[in-house]
Amino acid sequence: MEDRVLKIAHLYPKLLNLYGDMGNIITLTKRCEWRGIKVEIDNIGIGDEIGEHDFYFIGGGQDKQQQDVAQELYRHKEFLTTERDNGAVFLGICGGYQLFGHYYQPFEGDKLFGISLLDAYTVAGKKRFIGNVTIKTDFLTPQTLVGFENHSGLTYLQGDTKPLGTSIVGNGNNGEDKFEGARYKCVFGTYLHGSLLPKNPHFADYLIKLALQKRYGDVDLPELNSEIELNTHNSLIGKAY
Ligand code: GLN
Image 1 (cartoon, helix red, strand yellow):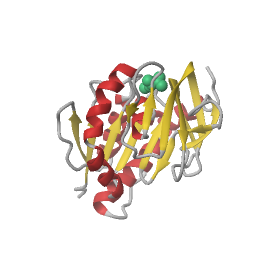
Image 2: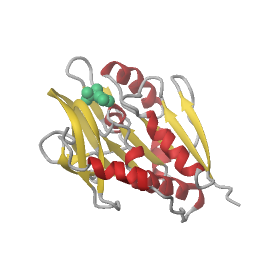
Image 3: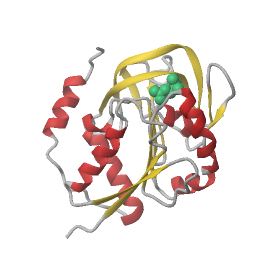
């Protein structure tokens, strides 16, 4: 009898949730439940304390919403850094990803300080990057991730923070170095909206396994039939429009 549980904190869903980011939470939940793993989701809002979880998710948003979230997130910087160092999984999409770095400098106005879970920073560019994306990773099977980007922020990685993958289609972090997204320890950031996880089931399972490891040590995750999800994935590889 399966009695494992995955505790997910969805950070500021009312403010940061663009282009179906919520689909990531639904995918994580379903892929756990189909395996008999219980999922507990806490929606964290402004003013709430967070408490220990296995998985922290934050979506994307406009600069205004990012502004509202940035200060509040910063209040939890120390706690979330400890959680990162204890092996919790973090997934940040676009605006949320930017706040996992040191700062986001919008085109106008003050710099928004991030929580430095990743050694990265973001500066608004003059151009907006909009379109489909395919990237190639070096740690997933299949290696590709597909999604959709819409951002003007240009993100640059430093130190031990590695890219999530390299761009095959799309602009990636900054349109220059071919890198897309970031990873350090179990923290992952990416510009891929779309939603990301429904059509990248192999990444969803990779993250679920990592997150279960925080609580249960080395775990084994039964295979699911992902034919439909992988067909969708495959049909989008390399597609620019
Ligand atoms: N404001 C950020 C940008 O345009 C984030 C946008 C988003 O989350 N889609 O770079």
